[in-house]
Image (cartoon, rainbow, N blue to C red; front, top):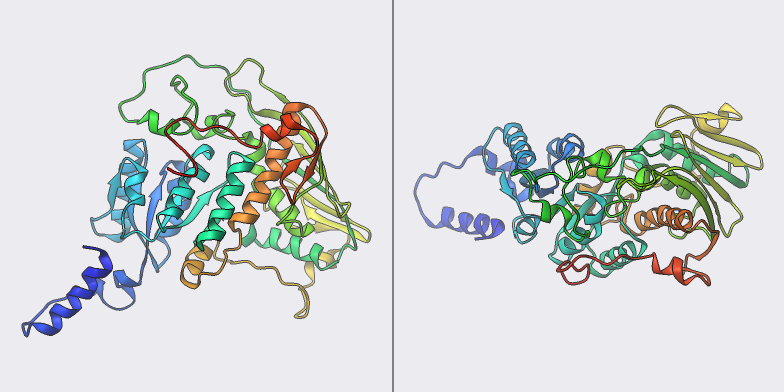
Length: 426
């Protein structure tokens, strides 16, 4: 019996039978299960637990009812944390995420897996009627486009899971630039963390704790190595991610596009160069520099070696030296003076991406970092990686999402998935 059917039938029974009934307090009032948004957690590693699970456990109108991970020990830890928080046993454990997607009593899922799973899991959840909040980024341009179109077609709520748009510093930078406080925006400079040079590893037996085939999923078959599935390592393998650049790019580059008012489009030209750890399985770019040009003539420069973000206009500049560290400007008034009531006020949620997601599940409003904007930001990262891999300047048509006169670059907009996984039918 479905959860809501049970509640309805329970009400009928209570009015039909004239017998004393003791109803537990937790099923009445504001804490009633029928008034909670039920959440299934898919991926319970370090970030999945310490960031995403913790944030949902704090929300009074959410209820985590199930957890899933290919590592049994991680799944058990997440379940234990959940039951302890609610002071009640009842959190379900699923070793296969498809079991969570088939549950009618789960309203939404939080996906905290490696990048190569993001679009596929999200699409599968959406087709099964779930709202989705998912870690960033996508793995390819084609996957992001499919996911964004699917969200629009189905009307499901989708949140790209980053906190930047709720942080005062980045919200303020985007607002002051959009309100013209530095004049006409001309240049944006961003620094992002460099990658790491991990050495090659030898194959080792798969631990009993792990379903390695399901961890790989749509990625190519590869021998198991000791650190391949660890967060700071898989991020440096092309099969699973776009490197440190695409990881941190989804933070600072989103604010760059937000401030440039190009969050739903993209650049028209990209040129990048980078270095990789030659001969290592950890083969994403370690050091890099990428230049983008937009149709509005704004130039964006991205370099490895920090977490800074600065905007330069015809009448001044503003920015931040490092991640969430404070604001600076050519004149203090640029960032200190509040935006007037008749100015442009950008959409945010001080409670963060999880709070914003739950609010939008209720209202059916688009979240502050929806699928289309998340896709466009991830595309900026993919464009940079493709340009560096080809060591070539590329011209891009953001409306068609195609490279101009470059078949090789266009072929790199997508990757084949390992059978039987399929983005459009799984």
